[in-house]
Length: 63
Image (cartoon, rainbow, N blue to C red; front, side, top):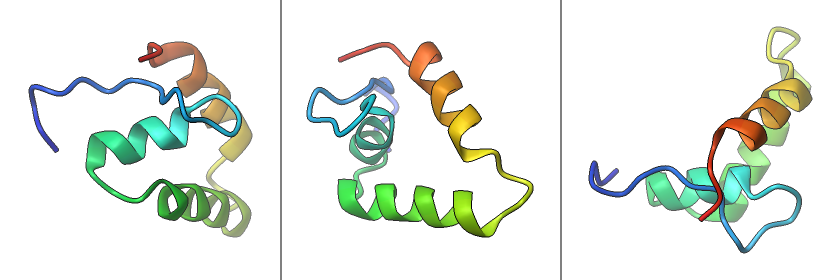
């Protein structure tokens, strides 16, 4: 994570660019972040994945 690099939604997106933006910000592979997000959403009853994604889509500015 580079503190000078702000969190932005990715322009190379499948849906809203949230996972791609998080991957770019963290310096991780986009596919890995997407798979992890889906797995956490499915396997955890306490993590409302769709709701969190929509909120992040609204809150995180576009690149």
